[in-house]
Image 1 (cartoon, rainbow, N blue to C red):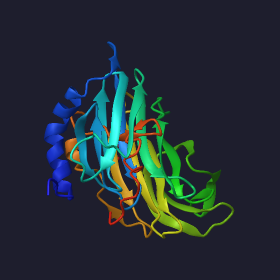
Image 2 (cartoon, rainbow, N blue to C red; image 1 turned 135 degrees about the vertical axis):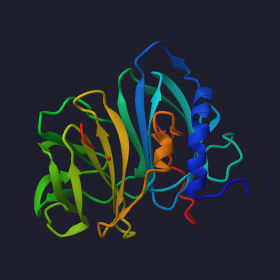
Image 3 (cartoon, helix red, strand yellow; image 1 turned 180 degrees about the vertical axis):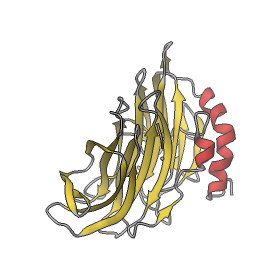
Amino acid sequence: MRRNPNKTVLAALAAGALTAVALAVPVSAHAATGAKLSVLHAVPDTPVDVYVNGALTLDNFAPGDLAGPLDLAAGTYSVAITAADAADASKPVIGPIDLALADGGNYTAVAHLKEDGTPGATLFTNDVSQTAAGEGRLTVRHTAAAPAVDVLAGGSAVVSGLTNPNEKVLNLPAGTISAAVAAAGSTTPVIGPADVTVAEGANTIVYAWGSLSANNLKLAVQTIDGLHGNPSGIPGGTAGLAADRDAAAAGAAGFGASGALVAGGAVLALLAAAAVVLMRRRGRADA
């Protein structure tokens, strides 16, 4: 009974995570502007623990939770992913994995299912270049156990044939769009429709995650604002199949620049696995 799997635990980590990360000094760091890292846990039914350089950093990180961004010194971090009830990082399910973060980089590490339904992880580099006045950026990422998909806006495809684990980046007039995900070539939604706000001076990132065959596909939304200035990331929540939204910020307030982040990343990523834990199933902004 060392952990309570509810989000109270994650909220508590907000106070202690910075300390944990400070202990997890980069294996190889240098004077730098540093990097920003957010983590999305997108493997259904699989809570995990994340250790950074041997220090427990995310405890019982739950599917659908988005943590970050964390300000990290540029360098290499050793990350191990364990089952949620592990006593320490001595018997990781994934890793340890060395993750190199570059100066000035802004990343989101997503632990997710591959197209064939097996666990995997992808480290995405977020586009934080400046946007034009009156415009926002919409990034769509396919991280679900599903074949190629089309992304629909107002019933028409704006992204076609997107495959896992790829992305499409669009610069659009700021506003709210009704977005849905459908099988490639189809206009019948398998996710949504859901209203997505494309904010001026922000990168709104939409993730399709879950499994088509298990009928648990969902949308997760991350917003990185300040693209007319210094970028920062703000968890935006999740939207389910019927476009109902859950709060999915993993104790959002606590995971700011001093929050408890650092969980997985891409096959070389911090949460490189927050999802990649051998399925222990039974388990957003104005400029």
